[in-house]
Length: 570
Image (cartoon, rainbow, N blue to C red; front, top):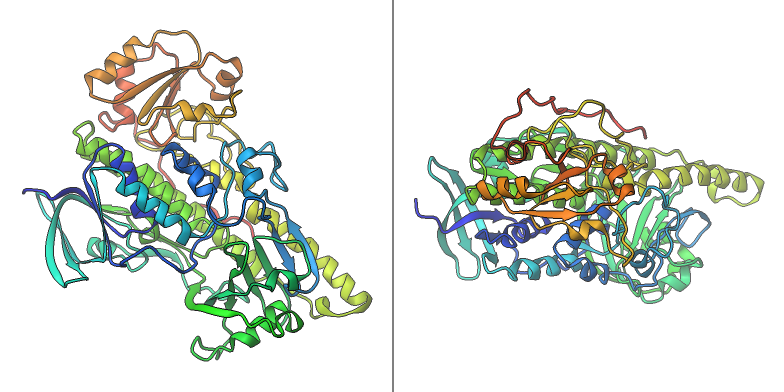
């Protein structure tokens, strides 16, 4: 079969575009098909994790993302109130963009746990996607085709085909590709073609974040002044009558308000003015005259993961592979981690440097992380959505004060669990993967609220700050990196890499502290900055590289990766 492209990517959201960037920077031909004619103009995801920011940093555009969203000095705090203009109960302080970039202050983040050159950032997905699109289009091997709908997908003996409709003129054509990756959302055409369903929890009911939700996107220049409290990124209204969640979009005059529709309430008949009065406060919104820009219905209560991530030449990533309730903000971030993992593996296979079986490690590594992350999101949705709120919290007098104090304590504990999550973001570990070296002894603990830097194979390579303000991570190569923490010779490694056609950068960093942190004098770091192996530099280099690229199976079967993970406590 003659191919039009190596990889057809269906879906031009963050997952599809980041996959195109990872393939494009390695010269792999890929075509992104997105049925929307342009990037989104409505709010979606609004939290970029530290790990996602690190991935953007690897590709050289983290600063562009950090400049998006709220003004540089706008607080990114999370505030819990009775009503948004009512009593402030507690506040989780998060550094503003300027302080996060300089790491001048960490707010309520634990300084010892956020060992990263890139703290989390708050900016709407609708601002981020145009940057990702421009980055993808900057690579000559990438074609980005917005306004093109995938109609059908077929996987054959010699390649895959995608039937496509160009929506502008109705022209149909067939795109022939070596692989097809579905980054096409929860109703994924690719996943359906694979015959794969979701497993997990769906449609769970809660007082909040469990059922039919409505996002109200609006403009109100005078709203901040009426809230009567220091600015924040996110405001939660927690009271017995009507709960809601307000996110600042541009830090000036645009916001999105999330509510859950009550039984019998419909999107078509919801009274926006009444909702705003209940969540924000009647006096605060009196004569405010907000301009409603969009009403977007959606459903909360999902923690779903695809049964499989690959069938032949077809693969899935992002929402096509997992569906979240948005507590913890990990849906879009898990998607980025998916495609960063997949991108370098596809490139090696397509360039003839690794066998097709390397792609099996994508599901082996990423599906357990989807189970882990959806489990955390579900636990946090339970924590806030099932929280009991006493009727007295809005009352005057001693009973009201007492009720608010008790609620504030519960919300402070919840906020720390949901938003101070260095372990969830930085502690991803692929121990037990078929392409990661096995070691005696347990991997580092997996605790969402604590991160322990570790050189254990499968873990993210630990950040090491440099005197110039950069990170050791910045000096890793685009592909594999051999990190030498002593003066051992590198020639055997360079020759082994040359023999198998594997791009390898040798990085010498003879620093005693770094050696102690990494736990060995030599470390093989993968393109996604996870550790493939560590040990002595005189180890058999060819065998180590063969294991890391799937050329050589492990001598012993890899430890079984979990099909389900223990639930996080709510």
